[in-house]
Length: 416
Image (cartoon, rainbow, N blue to C red):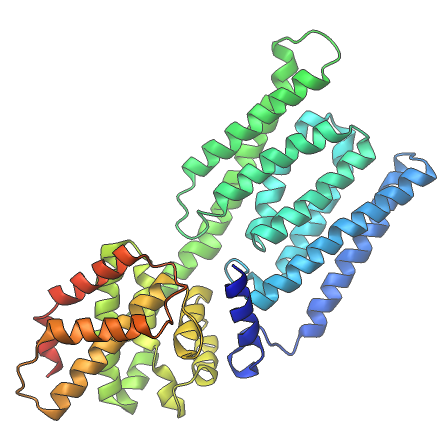
């Protein structure tokens, strides 16, 4: 993890390959300062309205400010590491709006019994509008404010913290595939157990069925709100990206047509590379739409001169490429950097194999090439280069990639 952080940091030192160098940095700073000041001021005001003592008001404001300080650090780190979900890093106002709305809820929750707070939804919502770390730190800050104002103590805080942590963990693994049902069951089950334990610990009298009515209502409300939240993201983020990939992966897409007019050789190289990327990604369960798109556009920078990240970045921003495709293209084009994503490894192998075979055919079109020897040599050279040492691709998956490339020997004849 530290190696990856240092590598990302090194990348930021060169502005031409930095995705998050923007002229509106002042706007990001303004939004951060706004949230910080509002968190302190309104948490103190809320404590005063709830008739807390002066020391309690001061303690609430100080702890709220300290908590949001962690949120600020998480935001800055995420901007530097480009680790926001979707394209939230380009639109921080989304998180600001959701945070302020959730903050409003956090100061109203003390008006109802502790078992009815929908913090599972708040944590997951904050995460989806930022990322895992920001969602967790900001959710903890809001939960802390509610607990301090209500004065229920550590039991309530830990109860909601465990439930929300479970929710963040399970939902952070489904934001791309969006297979949500298992995550819903696990998060609501953990939340239900935590709320039941809270009722047992805090109940002043004998327990009965009515004692668990509020936690049950909380779970029902949380289920409805989570489904609404996930519906929004599936429509506005997941399916939108899928539709965009369908457009980008159409051979008649205007950008590919422009590449064809510029150089038929580059165009057909992109077609062949995308074919192999798509085949391997589907067989290994990777994101085939992303891999195919990157196969098409990994050399699109040539239409503006040199195929470097600066040129490619301008083109993919102009055509609103999804963030994951941008990240893979950036990783691939930085030849001095390490590769982490599986789809980037696939692109590296496929592009190099196509380039090697095409070069040999350009020298001698009628040559009878030994494809296994070429593929083994290409993969060995790339492995020995060290670029994929830190990737998420296992040794077994590399062997699977090798096997699939060997199975495509008939296809390589189209490169003559």
